Amino acid sequence: MGQKKPLFRSVNTRTHGVRHGSGAKAKWERHTKAASTNVAAYGSMHSGQRHGYDYTPLFKFLLSRAGKNWDDVYSEAISRLDQEEPIWWMVAPDLSEGQAVFRSGESSYFSGLYIDDDNALALVNPDVTAENMTPFCACCTHTLNGVRLTTPFPRVDDLSQD
Ligand SMILES: [Zn+2]
Image 1: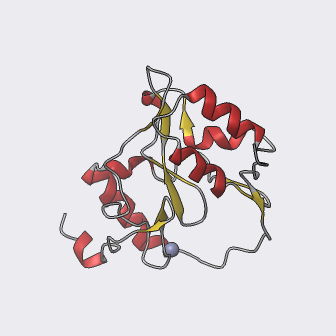
Image 2: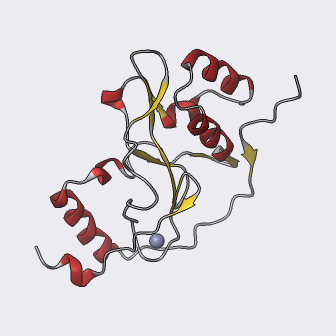
């Protein structure tokens, strides 16, 4: 067995330079709620970040293990982490507590996972993809599972219809 790399990396912390336009964003959020799409879970729970550490490798690892036995995935993940908590940012104990996507960074998201009845890791909502997920704002480049979103941010003009 080769040596396994850790599933986290330390990063230089930097100040957040991007300010979001609160007016348009609030409007969009109302619009989103009205539309009642899969975006309800965005931005809830944790930001997926712990000060000075980036757990993106963990999220990619977990995503790649969808369909696998949870006990195996969990024990490998734990052996390659400094702490257990980031696992639970992404993985829900069952579907009812799962999130379609969760925020893993300032403008990066990963698909939410849960442990299914067969004790396998599963996607909460496989229908949410980088092609159909709606970004939060126009000013950031958002990614889902490391892939850039292709749906443009809705213009304010489009939002005033309802
Ligand atoms: Zn932005």
